[in-house]
Amino acid sequence: MANDLNKGRRQFLIGSTCTLGAVGMVGVATPFVASWQPSRKSRAAGSPIQVDISKLEFGQQITVEWQGQPIWIVKRTPKNIADLSAHGDQLVDPLSSKHQQPSYAQNEYRSIKPEIAVLVGICTHLGCSPTYRPDGMSDDFSESWSGGFVCPCHGSRFDLAGRAYKHYPAQANLLVPPYFFKKETIVEIGVSKEEVAS
Image (cartoon, rainbow, N blue to C red):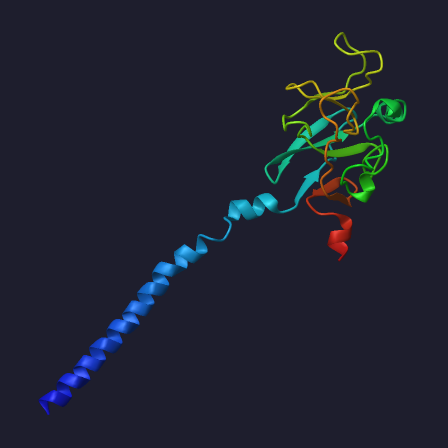
């Protein structure tokens, strides 16, 4: 009878120990497995962002961040828009046909609306961030310069549509991120209208 009692106690202790061990393993494994998931901040960084451009004035540029990259939104003046068609022969790829771009960026404006440019603010040469130079001719530019972006690292130049000028280090246009107009003055960056519709 004592043997039966010890056997029952032994089985109870083994069962309890195994159960506690299994619970402990789940407790240890849960944070370990959870650490494989991207953080909330990382997930948010890749999510589309909405930008209100209602206060953006002609000739003005704003910079927002999406996926760790600077995104420029520029409101071009009517003169800026007219100037875009005047210097196509000086550009590497005037219609953005050589490099992967959204279909709505394969025009001389490289945008959905001619007056609003949405560009990734990173030089396609070596990854510096160009400076916004919207003004036309100045002391350090030729007469043909009608405004755009200039890379401070190696001097690459882009027009106000982000198209690269010939004879400078960058030989590809600035990238256009996926975006669409959610409302007249709300730009959603990170997703195209086609992706939202599907």
